Length: 501
Image (cartoon, rainbow, N blue to C red; front, side, top):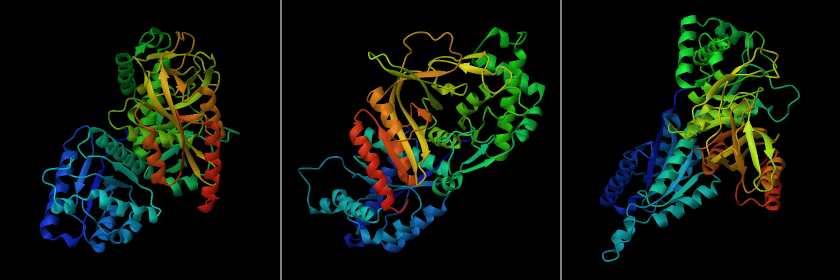
């Protein structure tokens, strides 16, 4: 099972020696108070590391270099308690390779009207110092997150926590190993791409292992382990009688368990946290993995079908970004539309592989024929997705750059039962409406495979794109198609000016 990574976030406070030792001691104490408050808030769920106040170019440069070298550090948060002349930060920020958040806050929420004096003003001048720091970062053309608000405010803390989870996702992506058990589906364009450029730009590696290697490991699984996993299925899901012990299709369930155990063993022993397969290459396998992929995704693995390594990497990153309390994150595919003008909807599904973290209730474990792959009928979990706001995103290779396309949707309950649809599915409303949202997606070159999440917000995905220095495009309630198409045109020009075309 892939571990949920534990990272740290360094809290750097800027000041200067002009104010004297007493003030600097107070700045240190105030910074420590904020760090302690954030660390003691379980809702934030991140570990912040206090660093002594920085007042010289040398100390700033040294701290940034230390952050770069520390694998536990996923990002750096900077707070200007007082005025910190920003030229001191040039060398350090030029070398800083970790994500940067500018926390524009102050110790006290309110102005003490009856006792405020110039001593108070000189100590508590984040409004002043933050602007100096902000100018320098803009002048350096450095991407960063800006969080504004009082550090004790729950909304401010939630925004900061979201950025921390995104930084963890980025750190995960930078070190991710994706294994391909098959090549890209023949003749398909959008799921293909430049794996070398992806590793240069995004960090994750994509390499192929023959399906035969996986099949060998699948064949090594013991009957005892298979029996135990079949019992786990029976205890966890609504397993149809034919698949239970004594049923006429129990061998199909045992084969699914064998395949799951083999996949998990192969992934764990080789350090892969994401994988792809393809129904066009199942040589030596009895059935296309359905239930095994669904369960591995729920454990946190990234997955993409038909050789779609970009989706596999994005799903893994978003699993981490969602955090341990994930409401549901999965690989997804836009499958078919409901075009009734009284309520247009999109039905998302796939042949088999939708993560049960999206399920509204206990999934059913069933076996049905599959019209592709030429193998035995695969076992799968079927369910309706739960209602709620969600993000639907894809990573696409535009030739001269990667684009992260983000669509905001609202999952809804199906209008009627779907007794003859033998797959997991989610029904949703596309923002701002199906006609505008779908047209915008197509104009942007969006893929038919996506990463779908009830937990990962649009701003987190935009932050991820900023950390990776790639383009992000958002389709939401405010999308106007004419403006959206102009944004695409402007981006072509902007990335050309960056020398990326």
